[in-house]
Length: 297
Figure 1 (cartoon, rainbow, N blue to C red):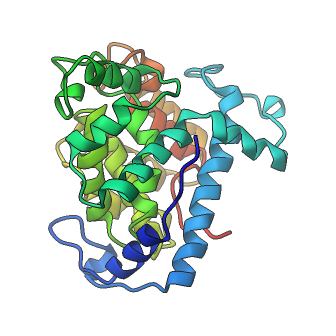
Figure 2 (figure 1 turned 45 degrees about the horizontal axis):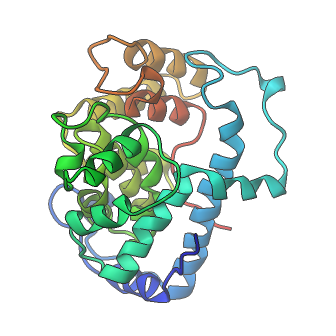
């Protein structure tokens, strides 16, 4: 599959960076207007794509091999630059290419139904929430009904969370716009916490163009999702555990597993299986330093 990333999208995003945020999804400190040059935007955008690509390529060999357990450091994969090519075969990345192509061909304000049509016509392999949603679409259940719990058995799976990077990368300093992308694309396959997870991740990327403090970045992104959601509660817990003992990430990891990693616990959502609930996957990756931060090449 060959996707042309239009310079038009990059330029639109750079221009829109001077537009103010609205509602509770404000930039850090309440600053409503920020600007970024096209050159700086392109540099940070490239860094963001490379950052997520490296994370995916490095992490996939260990996926599902240590659920609820810490991996032995001496058994972790050895990173080699050529491994980055593994990302071409990972759904974390290639699904995003469909979303970007939809934006390029249908416009930045494309509706969820039209985006769902493009997703339904994709031909790559899918699993879990993505596969369930695409099956629904092909059976005639249009988006956003394709992700509704009445039609979907795994609404809190990690799918949009791992595919939402594009939504913040395209809109520097505008977390509210990343949230809107979630309504256009995330609702195809996820619902509730599953959707909020991707909107949160997108907001992290958008905020990180201007904020270098990780805690402030997370706090700002937290304001972009419903405060009463279980996902927001998980983020607040992570911030509290970090503040209580910033140096002991293993302790925070254990607390996260106990609180959010149990199959039938009160925080568990509707997932294919517990290892891919959006809350446990983000909180455990955050404890190991994988929280989204500002990226440069």
